[in-house]
Image 1 (cartoon, rainbow, N blue to C red):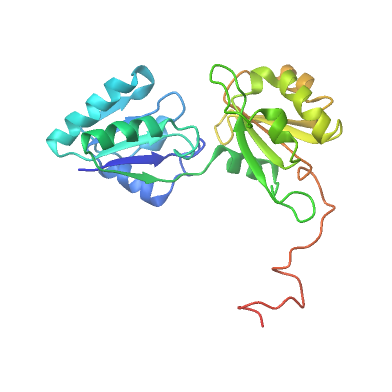
Image 2: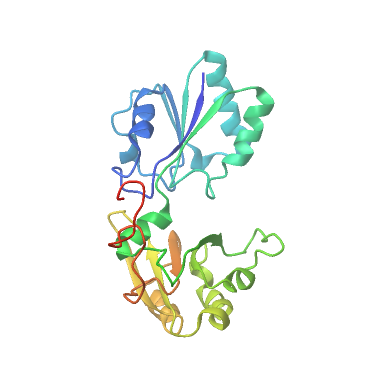
Length: 248
């Protein structure tokens, strides 16, 4: 018996790995994060039990998994995006290790990747930014020392900010000294879902634009000069005259 932590992707049922889809269709028990994972992701399953974990707390989830383990049944534990990012799988894995229940993590498409695709953007451009920082806004849970938004912003790297749309004005105020007022920024709401929407602007006007859209949750913020930027050097990989293993 194995618990499979499956990344279901950002919302589009087709943005799930072949392995993840196969396991969902094979496992006799499915526990899915119903607030973020559409039911369409579960299509084709033949599970005996399908449980929406949005209504459960950690102990109840572990009890369900332990019961399946006792029956010798595999469990598809379906999370949104990639489960290794803000998926709250760490606390579940800790419990499974204590109980001696085996598990495997199946990666998924991240919200950041989906948002970059929607914007038609490469997040790492030569001479512009070669680093991407994934973080979140500190609200109920404080950030560890040194990971405050203003500290991370000092790098000037491309940044993906989760769970921050309700605090957009505060975020802008912390980014401004490091990125500049004209720095591009985008707020993407429910990327790849049927009702997806987004706004693109600068640090000067993005708060007003996002407020006009009424974005309140399930939105990702992307900021950095890679957005809408056509002024950058070509990569060495495809540059004529640059030799490598496959192109002597």
